[in-house]
Image (tube, rainbow over all chains, first blue to last red; front, top):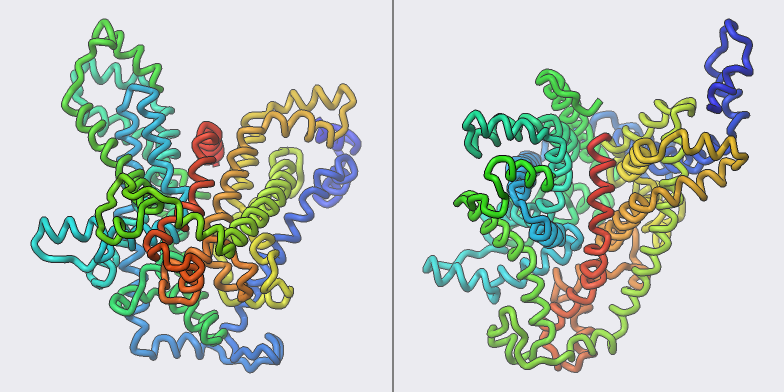
Length: 318
Length: 305
C-alpha cells in the first residue's frame, strides 16, 4: 500500500532511477529503514570487518606494527604448512572425521522421522518426541562428561562390554574408537532434533497417494520407497547442501574435550591446529592462513553441492 | 497427518480400532522405545549417583536408583559458592543476551519481511554470505581485542545477537502468518507504524518469539568455547566452562578447591554428577513446555526458507 503511494508520487510514465525511488520510499516510511541500521552495523563490524583481517594471513603479522606495517609474506604461510610433515595428518583427520560424520549422522534423522511417521497414537508420538529432543538441549560439555562417566574404566558400558566380549575396549583412549565415539555422540545429541524438519516435510505428503497405492496392493516398503521418499527428496537435498557448508567444522569445542594423550594421532584436526597454534602459541599469521584454507574449501563444497543439486533437478540453496 | 491416516484406516478396514497391528508396527515402536531409553537413562544414572552415598558410588552399585540417599554433594556445591556464582552470572548473561538478541532479530526481520522495502536482495545477500564464509578464529579474536571486548561480559553477548538463521526463520514467519491486509486495515484506521508492530504484529508472533528466545537462551547457556578463547578472568566465565574445567581436567586446581570445600565428604564422582545435574536441570525443565512452539517455529521457518 505504501509502495503504491510512493509510486503515485512520481509522475506516471516518467523514468525514475533506483536511488530516487529509494529516497522516496525512505521518506515514506523512514522507520522501516532505520530499524535495519543496527543490523547493518553489526554485520559490517562483526562479520565483514574480520574478513578484511584475513590479510594478516599473507603477512608476518606483528601486533605492535598492526596489519598496515607488518611485512608482506605472500603465500609463505601456505607453503610452510604444506612443507611440514604433519599437514597430511591434520588434513586427513579433518576429512575422515567430516565425512564419517556426514555419512552416519545425516541419514539418521531421516530414518527416525520415517519411523515416527509410522506411529498412529498422538500421545505416544508426542512423548517419544519430547524425549528424543532432550539431548539437543544439553551442552556438549555435559554429553562428554556423561560419556566419561559411563564409558570410562569405571563406567557401566565399559564393564558390560568387558564381561560380554571377554576383553576390554578402551573407549576413551583407543585411536581406533575415537572417531566412532565422536560420531556416536553427534548422533545421540542431534538426531532427535533433526527429525523436526523431515517430519514437517512428511506432513505435506498427499495421503490419497497412500490410499491409491494400498488399493493397488503396494506393501509398506513399496509405499515408503515410491511415495514417501520422493515426497521428501527436495528437503533431503536442501539439508544436505546446507550441511556441506559446515562439513569441515569438526567442532573444536567437542574434539578438545574428547582428545587426550592416547588419541592425539586422530584427534588433531585443522580446527584444533588453529586454536593450539594461534591462540595458545600466538602464531597468528600462520593459523589465519590455515583457517582461510578451510573456509575456502567449505565454500567450494557448498557451491559444488548446490550445482549437483541443480543438476538433479532440485531447487538447491540459491 | 495422524488424523488423516486414521480416516484412511477407517476406509480400509472398517474400523481403525481393529486395524491389524503388524510386526512392522511392533518393531518401530520397540526401536523407538529403545532410542528414548538411550536418551533418558544416562540422566537417570547421573541423577541417581548425585544423590547417593559415596560408598555406594565407589562400590559401583548405583545404576538407576540411588543408594544411601543424601544431598551432600548438592550442599557442598552451595557451600563452595563458585558454581552458584557462575550459575547466577550465566543466568544474567543469558537473559541480557536473549532480550538483546530478540530485539535485534525483530528489528531486522520485520523490515525484511516487507516486500515494499527497497534493497531487500542486498540485505539478504549480506546475511547469507557469513553463513558460509567466515573470517576464522584469529581475525575475529584480533577484532575483539581491538574493540576492547576481551575479558568483558559483552564478548559473550554482542558477537552473537544477530543470527542469520534465526532472522530468516522470523522473517518467514512474519511473511507467512501475518496477512498484509491486517496491517493495511490498521493503517487505514490511523495506527502508526510502531503501533502496528507492537499491537498487531508482535502479539500475533508469540509462537515464533517463544521459539527463538529458546534457541537464543539454549545456545548461549550451552556454549563454552568462547569463554575459553576470549576470557581469562575466572569471575567472567560461564557455568559450562566451569563444568568443562571440572570434568575434562579433573586434576586441575578447580576440582581440588571444590572437593576441599566439601571436606572430602563427597567423592569427585558424586560431586561431578551433582554439578552436571545442577547445570542441566534448568533447561530440561523448561524445554518440554515450549515444545509445541518450537516445533511449529522450526517448521514454518525452515520449510519455506
